[in-house]
Length: 172
Image (cartoon, rainbow, N blue to C red; front, side):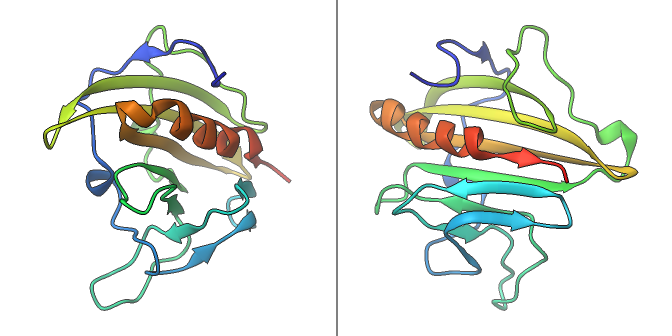
C-alpha cells in the first residue's frame, strides 16, 4: 500500500517527466544508496538497483550545486521519481498546503501529498507530489518528491517513490 490510499486532487494539470526535470541517465552526477547533503541536512536513500541522476545540468555539461536528482525505474524513461530541494529566498515563496491535502511523515519537515491524473502527450498519466518544508538553521529548505508515470504503472512507481519518501529525513 502507498503512503496514503487516497490523496487530495491537484488543481494543476498532469505533468510528464520531461516537463519537471532535465536529468537523464548517464548525464550529470550519479547517486546510489544513501544520499547525504550536509548543506540541507538531508538524508535520502535511492532504492537498491536504481540510480539517481543529478537534476541540474547545463547545456555545456556543467552542473549546479546539489538541488536533487531523478530516478528512472524503466529504460523507456516514461516514469520517474524526481527529488528536489532548495533554499527559500523569499517568504512569499513558501509552499502552501492546499486544503484537504493529507500529511506525510518526513522527519524534520512538514510535508503533504497531492495527486492528479489525466492525459498528456497522448498517454494516461498520474502524478503524486509530496511537498516538504523544513527549518534548517536560520533558513528554510523547501522541496518535493514527484512520482510521475503511466497510469498502468502506478502501483510499481508509487511503491518505489513511497520508499524514497519514507527514507527521507532532514535535520542534524
